[in-house]
Length: 261
Image (cartoon, rainbow, N blue to C red; front, top):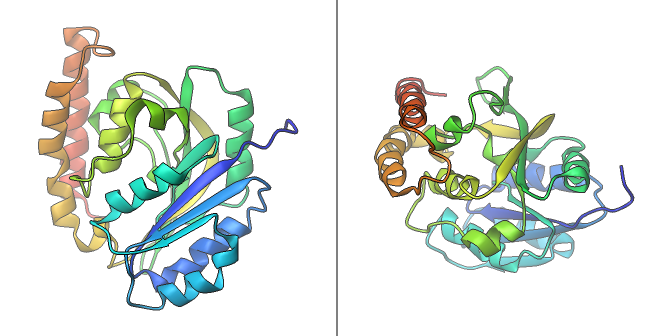
């Protein structure tokens, strides 16, 4: 790899995930990445989270502990503080895969100017489930980007210029805020799939996509419809392409609403 280590800003939104938080933080420090900017935003946890954060405080570039309006607002607070060349957020119950930050840095050093985001694979794990690998789609693009989450969020690292283009997440969204942001970003730039594992994604009863699965599964369909109607025709070149988007979207939504993790 080139000698240049881009600064990576990693935002960790946190709220009452103390039982998982320390493992998340350790997965970050074990990267041994030389130019890491870690920003933790906690929404006023009442469990053991605060004591864990205080114990690790010297490792954080920024630590915010205050009430907020939810995950989207917490992430936005971190995004406004991020000064790195690359940015991502990592939920306080997920983990970075060994060597993930070096892999991302390698991509950054060789990426094309029009490539603004890279993504890789994750290991889905948790109580009472067998570990399974999930990689982002590499075929059938760009339609899949409009149709649903076609890559694991913890693996998506983007260049900071994306924030100058789009700003932060829509704080009115609590389930589809990442999908909304990625689609709007894809309208203007290219994404790069990596053939590497970059994260571990934890499934547990307190996770929104598990404990509130029915609510989670009901959100993409109306949001997708609204988003599709608002899109400029930048990358929907033909009627055929539009039908392809809708076709993929229907398959994705059907799977999401009928198959629980």
